[in-house]
Structures are given as C-alpha cells and as structure tokens.
Image 1 (cartoon, rainbow, N blue to C red):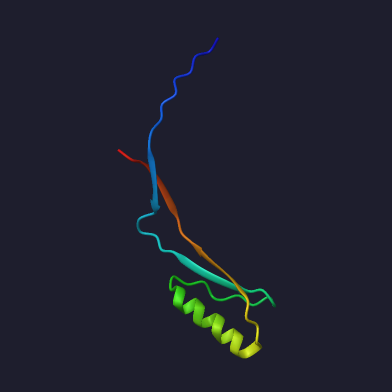
Image 2 (image 1 turned 120 degrees about the vertical axis):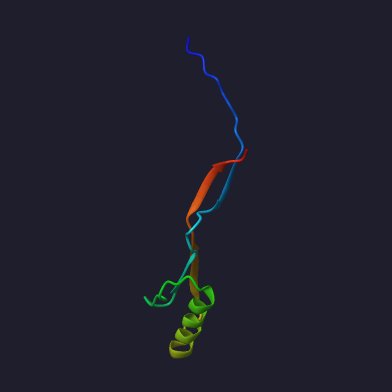
Length: 73
C-alpha cells in the first residue's frame, strides 16, 4: 500500500509584474476588430467610431492579463 502525505498551502493570484492588461473588441455584426491596446478607453472609442460609420452596436470586449500564482506565506 502506498502512503501519501497531503499538505495544504494557501496561494494568491495577482497580475504578473511588469505586464500590462490588453483590451480588445470585435463587432458581433461583421468581421471588424478594434486594434488591441493597453488603453481600454481607446478601444471603446474605436467601437463608437465603428458604430457611427456602420450602425453596428453590439461588440464583444475582452481584457487579457498575465497572472502569477504565489504561495501566501
């Protein structure tokens, strides 16, 4: 019979240091995509400009970041 030792250690997850969040958006009506940016407001402006030109009003927005999991001592 094999014995196992279980050890529970608390962890925390944070944004990776020296990394930026990236914001993206794509139109749900056509194939248009906003230029990815670290400025979320800039991506929103791109979406509003697209709406003004096309009348398309529905977008999928995403925010991506790198995560770091560390032991919480």
